[in-house]
Amino acid sequence: MSLNMYEASIPVFVRMLGNLSSILDKAVICAETKNIDPAILVNARLAPDMYPLSRQVQIATDMVKGCAARLAGIDVPSYEDNEATFADLQARIAKIVAFLQSVSAEQINGSEDRTVTLKLRGREIQFLGQPYLLDFVLPNLYFHVTTTYAILRHNGVEIGKMDYLGAY
Image 1 (cartoon, rainbow, N blue to C red):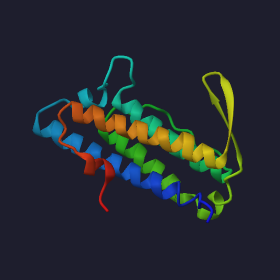
Image 2 (image 1 turned 120 degrees about the vertical axis):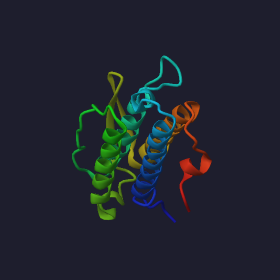
Image 3 (image 1 turned 180 degrees about the vertical axis):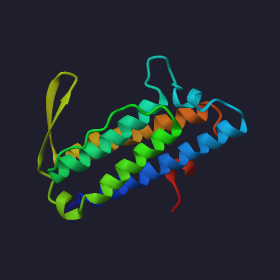
């Protein structure tokens, strides 16, 4: 049985962004309960040379919108990376989920061998569709969602593994 590219991408992306949204909701509640300026959490980092939480969310959402568009053979939507609040980040997630849900299975399926070209750090890298999804996009999505989780957990937000995984 061959891999269904749609099922391996869009539902996974939507689920993980939903889990990310729920984690951000818990961060807002934590900030209110503990009287913490939410900007502290939005700008928090695990290490000085790492991106802050806001950028982690931006990269996670950019990764999946780019993948969906490239696999579907449509233009990648472009959004400014100017989110500075949890409300801004939630709006970005909602916008990306709406875009993902507008991409059909018919557009994605059959993209296993579609050539995807990315410009990364000043050079072009080419992938075929399936390795692009499985070996590049999904690991990046999980990395940036996990890093967001870790930043919040490190800063006292009461979240656990099931918040990351979501309900089944």
